[in-house]
Length: 329
Image 1 (tube, rainbow, N blue to C red):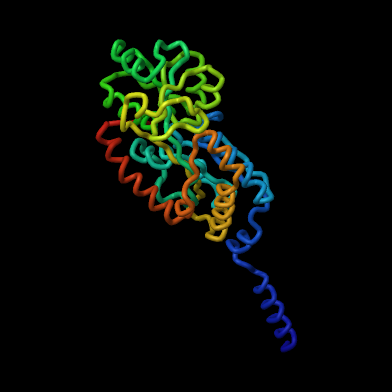
Image 2 (tube, rainbow, N blue to C red; image 1 turned 30 degrees about the horizontal axis):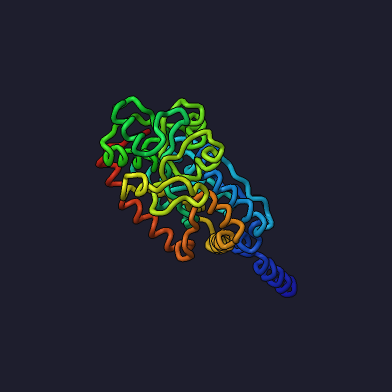
């Protein structure tokens, strides 16, 4: 009996030694299968394009395929919640923007806590907005657009990827700055809105510049101004708002990466490391630069600083949304 007991204790000790905590085991082997990045907009928009550039390079560093899944609707809220409800194992990530990870919190009654149910990983990039019009609109520059809008008050339509989006707020600010009035048409993302702008079904858009580069270069729409102090590197002939006669009218959007809240810290650290290396790659930076996306400084590519920035943005924008009485859903 005594020998049997000793053998039992020896075996039990061996078994205990083999029982590694799940979080540690997951971190050590991560990633062992494909990763999905959820884009909360339809395919073809600026966020989708950026996500695919990032995903392609991250996949090479991870040694696993990084897929992009488009889950559109409710200004991005549906796609964000898809990740909030996903297993916290690092295999489902959320890429998003100022709109999807800040503005919707002041706009919608969400089924989750936007600031606390996701773990911030890194800010990726930022880009200015661009004021674009349908090709047939009788305005060849920004001043002519403003004159046309004043001559047709309330008749023009501006496409936006949802009420309360960055483009919606920029459009409201544009109306206030120019004394114009036009209607907003919500879409399920910038991609479908740009398609309707190309088709001439809507008159204008004020959205992130990456949505328009290919179409402007192809001549299917016209860009009248970029809402920044410097010109767009991919469209150097497009004037800034200062040059176009609307000085001081600046607007930009930022992009970031998140995981479900309870994702193990070691896994988050691995994702952040790969993200930082991806953003430092000259080829990735060149592709983003052509879109007008400026890679975020290294200090904002860290979870703590990015989390603080996201909360500061909420404190800034939520009162503005409330003051404008913007509501949806």
